[in-house]
Length: 188
Image (cartoon, rainbow, N blue to C red; front, side, top):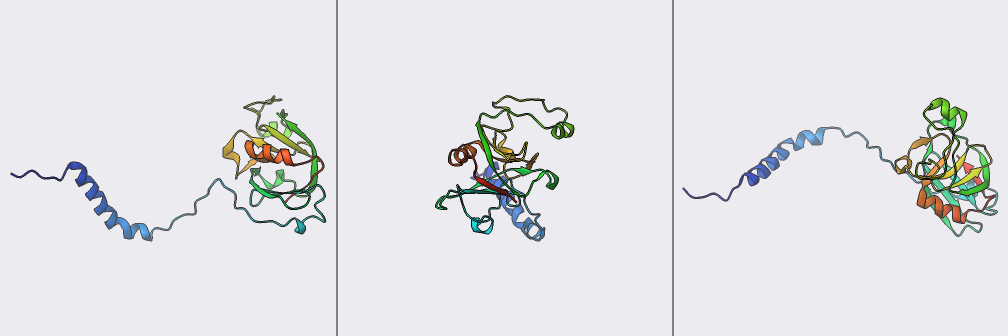
């Protein structure tokens, strides 16, 4: 009896190919649900639509597209960063503010409301790897609202904060370096 070159592996591969061909019409007819990704759907913004002038520059935090838009003082440097945004509309402040202070290695003190929502939160957290404010923070005129980094990169592109705007640590470090205290900010 002649020896066949068809191995068990070949039979499995051929069988799978035949089965996929037979199943193709059923797969094609199956409706596909939209896939949700952990990314921002960036929209280009024009600073002129929101500010009278650039002054020392401008930042728009777009909570719908989950992106932060930055312009320098003469408008020649425009950058867009993916962000995390507040978990709910109730936690989101939508209006004009400005950067009032900056800090490398921020510490974190959760607000009373944060601790009510999650009693396991510590009363205080020093700067470091576990700190949810990441490596850099820029404080807004509203108490407890910041633009900051995060060590938890899964949060970017999602509704995941208690009111703050979060960026990847490398991106907040870049933004921190080019943003002066006093820069105008719009959260929308």
